[in-house]
Image (cartoon, rainbow, N blue to C red):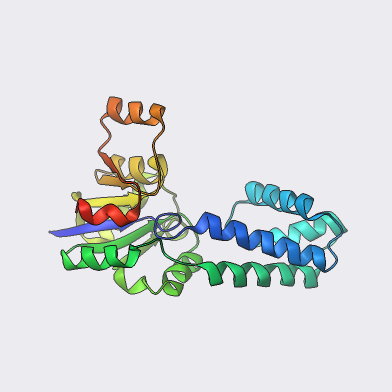
Length: 226
């Protein structure tokens, strides 16, 4: 039977949140410098509010921002914001230290590798391709194609079916306790929490509920336990 390791993508393989924030700030600065009639900080707060309301995968954040401030969409400012955002984000896009080495190590140990991610198919694949790590993964499962998001056990079970792996021989690696790790455990897998720390309350919960997870400081330490 195949041994499998599944990874979350955002903030597990790469620091998506930090890069996205820098890119959004750069986009707002460019828009304000080219006619958006509001102070930089106010515009950025408005953008954050729109993202919170619509979700990060929504495609019209800058459209709504210009419409709210100008009464109508401004094609030039929208295009400027989008182009600046993508240029800055992808110029900064890097995997966490030793991510490539960890993937090579796991392959050398005979693990099949997959990704289980909440997000859009093309956007998540694009990150893997731009990082040049897409070829390590036997499958990539997104919430968009499955129709449910982590921590719903069904997304993990679908990944196991496609990989033809048993849950008790499979491991999920992610940066969020409930979304990545508890969801995987509820599907019968074990889990490794990386790039994150547990609060005292979370530690007590993990011990009390006997949740089968291992906590590592960062993804670069995975080869110390697998």
